[in-house]
Image 1 (cartoon, rainbow, N blue to C red):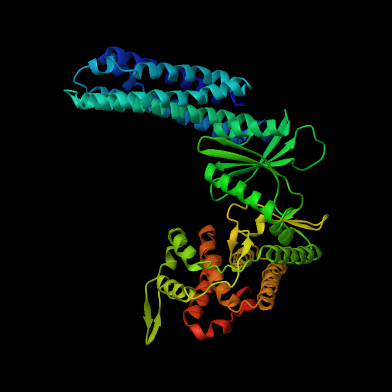
Image 2: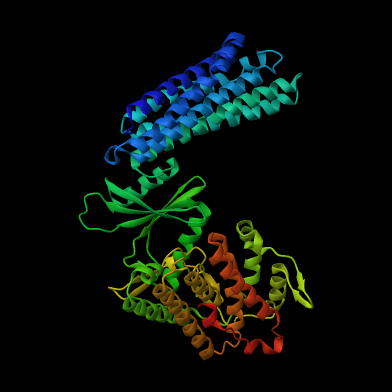
Length: 541
């Protein structure tokens, strides 16, 4: 880690002070010495001052230092480590207070709490060396202490619970367990410190489990030295990084590394495999899949080209025309290949109701009650959704096709050189009503936060072009309720998308469009389902 001398010195002073307090706590647990307990309590203000010196030093370095001499990730790590070390000393103080509640120290003498502190002491000893040296193995050893403490504490918990049933003073046993739990928490802090050091060394945020998964991925690629660049983080918590060979003179990634919750990545792997069986060549290849506890990682083929969003915003008109044409042609081929006679219901309103709470948390003004203006009744949003849901109950798509399931612009790749459309982020793929994908695509165009007139025209063209294609497909395949089902999907997507938008003007524009659509749907009679139409061009202006 590259740190200014003042920051590094104060961080090392804080390390020494933290280790001293951990050692004193170990003595206290073994001897119950009131003098040692007082010594720990008296040092609380000193650790706070040292932490603040580190924080202030980092701020001064950013404010007055030369750009070429600064390492932002090291400064960020130093701040985090200082806060974590103070947290360890706070736990020491909490343990001193809990010791005062014990009737005697006998309950603690038989415990392994002091032994746990030996592991904490060992971890703190390694921190300074890990900061000085570029040794990831040492960083991993610090993180591994957390796992060891978890295992020991689990055994202690069971023995304490068993003893509590027959103890004469169960409050002593309980206090002893609380102290052990607080010491176990120090292991979590050491894990956090190890991740801060790792992040500083790699120049990007890095969890220990992610680092292990990444090492496995690089091994699968046969790379000893590689460059890893964070590309994005998904809303579901997955992190996405591009991997390139360190000695490769050509630009571009060799593969994409994705890690996150195991069930999410398992779904994506299975969906990609389904795409390869159903429609080969559209989804990327899975190069490897690794599990790490509750998390997992995927190594995925890097697809050449641009996302549809990049084509819209950065490309020229010719590229956009080609992309739209190729997308329509690809969808037609997929739908034709996968269409079956099984009727399906997309349940757009059900999807909306599941996500409505998250929308209201961001935009509470949308949660209006029923209102009246003279003789005019203005229904609440909940009322409108309920009415639309009643209409949707009588609707089914006359056939199902295999859909993407999350058909946003950034999940569609256009390779102009090879004239190909490819799909990514496929964990929601399934056989469903194609209005699901079309409505998501159209609204993902509208919600782009771009203001210049020419780009807005291109955005409108993109949304309306796919609508026209889908409407033509519906007509040719005798799908008579396509427009009404699409309207339900558009209303859902206009509202649910606002939970990602903090621009009040744009969010309100989308909300009002959804309300207008829902009002139109609520007035639709069963006999008129086939005649339902929306002014789509005006809605996307």
